[in-house]
Length: 77
Image 1 (cartoon, rainbow, N blue to C red):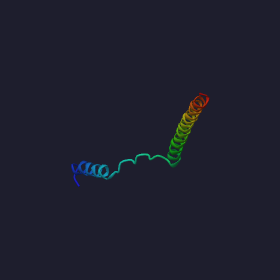
Image 2 (image 1 turned 180 degrees about the vertical axis):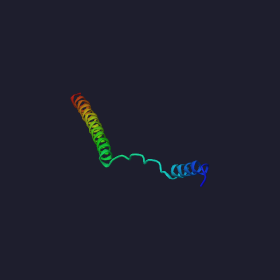
Image 3 (image 1 turned 60 degrees about the horizontal axis):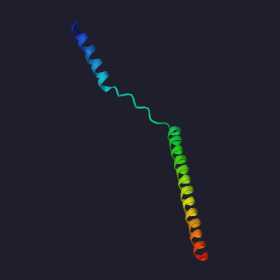
């Protein structure tokens, strides 16, 4: 092998090594992080449903109270 063949061979080996290398895998989310995110979303949904339930219950109570006032006025007259 002559002196000119050696750099060409090294270049060929280098190109082959670069071509066969795989990209570094992207770090995936760990199971603990996924569970934490899902748990946080679940807690937010439960709190939202609780607030909505309380609002609807107060509206229902105010409707019943206003119905009682109207009924009392009708009976008193």
